[in-house]
Image (cartoon, rainbow, N blue to C red; front, side, top):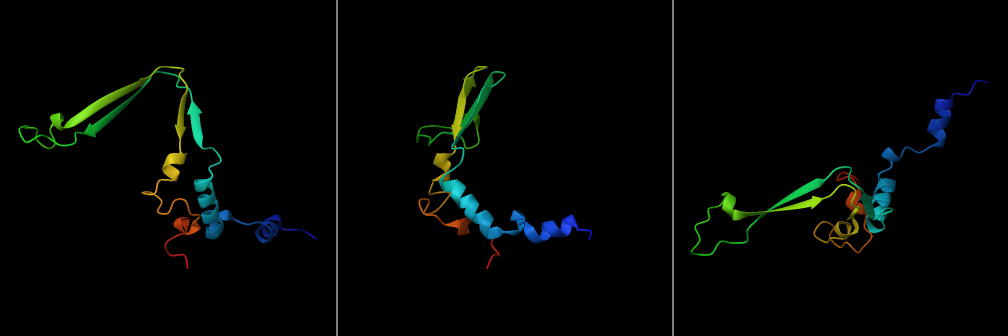
Length: 116
C-alpha cells in the first residue's frame, strides 16, 4: 500500500495557528513568566538614542507656545561601541496600564475578539 504522508500529517499533528486556546494559553504564560526576561547585546558602532520630552507646563509669565521648540526638552544618550546593553521586558509585561489585573493569569486577553 502507498501511504500519503500529507494525509498522515493532517491526522496526527496540530497546527498551532488553528488553536486559539493554546496560543492564548502560551502567550499569557510567557507574559507572566517570560522565557527570556531580558535581551543583551553589544553594539558594533556607537549608538545614540534621542529622547524628546514635552516640558510639563509653562509658568504664567512664560511666552512658550504649544508646538514650538521651546516647549520640548531633548536628551541624547550615547552608548559606545562594545558596551554591554541589556533591555528588560518584565516591567512592561506586568504593567497594569497595559494588562489590567496583570498579576492574574487570564488567557482571554490573547483570544481573538470573535472567539466564543
